[in-house]
Length: 289
Image 1 (cartoon, rainbow, N blue to C red):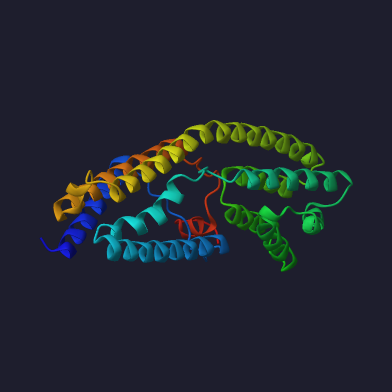
Image 2 (spheres, one colour):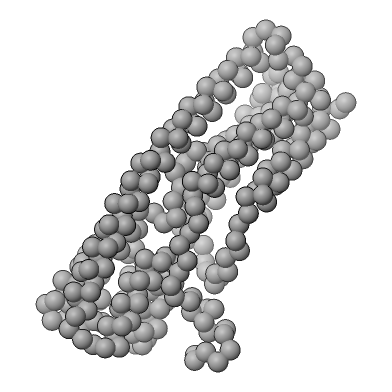
């Protein structure tokens, strides 16, 4: 069998196994308004391309030195997939929740001093935590551009795109409508609730770190053992044949699928948002524009 044909067959087999497992896990479709990619996502895409390029270069070197064509498939997959599967995963970054808590407390303190809601929000420009600073600065810009307070807060909730952010936005909307004196106390209570959520998520992350570290060490030890077997002795000679390389790629694909399954189980389901995004609300029949 041609080695190139064997490598192509192995790649198709690996892709098929991962696709079957991904479909078995299942994902609920989430419809969200189109938005420009965040700088963090762009940076992640660039990092993925760099890792894929480095893995492919490593695979070429291994294929030229050992004649093992399967390295052209396995090396890029290992460079790209393993860091993703073995990295922490959470529904919302804890740092973002902490920033929401800090900003809410700051806003409540300014409201206690007697400032109006809009002026209090603008006054938080210099003390906003970095994690939510872009969203808060856009909120301030909309208020200064004479958006209605309700529309600006709804857009702020869309920028945060989180159930906790929706809860903060709902209280701000209620304060903008009622203009009562109890908003500061409500925000203080809300900040305390967010702080409890942060502590709970910290504990969850600590519990998830233990099996993740175990999986990381098992993967590293397995990779070292496999490398040693291929470099020493004739134990791995059956896997040097075209059929053996296809089988080996299938085994590695199954292992990556198990890691993917573990990550999906640990991640859980995201908490649904409380507010309908503006882009969807504007498209609903009978909705006021």
